[in-house]
Length: 520
Image 1 (cartoon, rainbow, N blue to C red):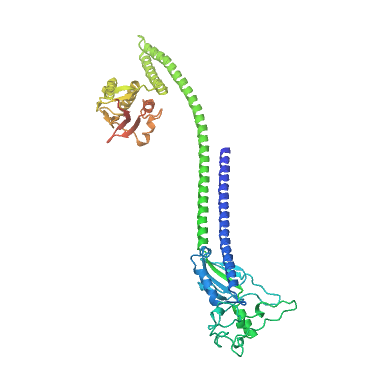
Image 2 (cartoon, rainbow, N blue to C red; image 1 turned 135 degrees about the vertical axis):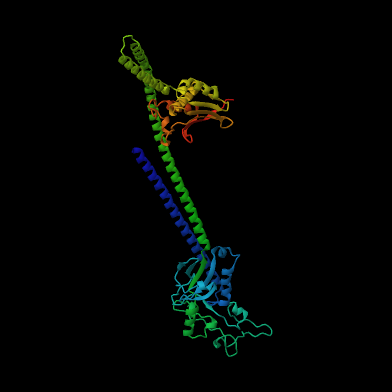
C-alpha cells in the first residue's frame, strides 16, 4: 500500500512538471506573438517617421504638391531595394484628412477604408492596418494648424513653382520677362497685377507679441485668391491629419506558426520524458517487488529443500521396517501349521508392503537432486535393454514391442536416461490391453539433435490431462503411484530436453522426447 502511494505521488509530480512546462511554453509563445506585433508596430512608426521627414522636405509655403508626394508613396510601396520597406511588408499607404478620408494613397487602396485619424490598429487575417497621426501636427495659439495641405498645382505653372520653390523676383534673362505664364482658368487672377506680373501680397501683420501668425492664416500665393469659405473647405478636405498603413502579416504569421510548432514539439517531448520517467519508476518499483519475491522464494526454496531431504530420509528409513514386516509375513505363511486364512492374510500383508515400498522408492527418486553426468550412449541399444528388463510384463500381456529407427548416439546421463525409458515403457505397458502394440523409434531431427518416440495403441490420454500427467501424484492407473512421469519430467528438464504427450491416431498415445543432442 505504501509503495502504491509512493507511485501515485511520483506520477502526480511528473504530471505537474509536464503541465508546468506546457504552461511555460504557452507563456513563451504569447511573448513571441507580442514581440512580433511590437516589431510590426515599430516598423510602422519607422515608416511614419520617414514619411514625416519627407513631407517636411517637400513642404512649400505650408503646402505639398500632390504630384511630388505620390511618387514618394509609390516608391515606399513598390521598392524592392529598400530594406526597411521590404522587411516590413508594406502593402498600401495613405495620408488622411481630418475626416479620415485618404488624400493621397498608393498600393492596394481597397485596404484603406475610412479610418479614425487617432492612433489605432486593426488586425485581420492577412493584413494589419495602422492609423497614426502625422508627426508634428499641432494647433498654434492663434488657432491655425501647422499641418501641410496637399494641393494640385496649376497645369501651366513653371517648373520652379511646380517643384515647390518660393516665388521671388529676379532680373529677366535676355528675351525673357519677369513673369510667369499661366492660364487664368487654372490660376486665380489675384496673383497678378495690371501689368501681368505676379504680385506678392504683403505678409500678415504681427500680433501683440510681435509674432506673425503661421499656418492657415499665412496662405501660399496660389491660395490667396480663394475666399475664406473656399480656403477652409480646401483645408478641411486636403489638410493632412493622419497616416494609414496596410502591412502584410505574412512574416508575423510565419513567426507565430513556427514558434507554435516549436512549443508543441517541446511540450510533446516533455510529455514523452515525463511518461518515460513514470514508466522507469514503475519498472523500478516492479523490479523491487520482484526482488523481494525472489528473496522470499529463495527462503521458501531453502526451507522446501530441507523438508525434502527430511522426507527423503524418513522414506528411506521407513523402507527397512517395511522389509522386516514383509519378511515376517512370508515366514508366517510358510509355517507348517499355518491355516489357509493365516496364509491369505500374510499374502495381503506382503502385497500392501510391496505397494508402500514402491511408493517410497518413487518418492526417493523424485526428491533426489538431479546431477547430470553426460556420456555417449547408443540410444537404440539402451531402449532394447529396457525392453529386455520388462520382458516378463510384456509376455504376460502378450504385447508386441518394436524398436527401430536411426542408430544414433546421444549425450546423456546413462542412469537417468535408463530411468526415463523404464518409466515411459512401463507406463505404455500399463496403458495397453492384452495383445496390444508398442513401438520405440529413434529419428534424426536435425544435424545436431535427435528425437525419441514411444507409441502405444492403448486407451489414450484425454486432452485436458496431457499436461497434468507430468505433475506429482497425478495418475489414471489404479495401481500407479503418480510419480513415474513426474520423475521423467524432472530428468528431462535437467538435461534441457522437452517432452510432450500427443495423440496416436487412430488410438493410443505418443510420448515424444526432443532436443536430444547427438554425440560427436
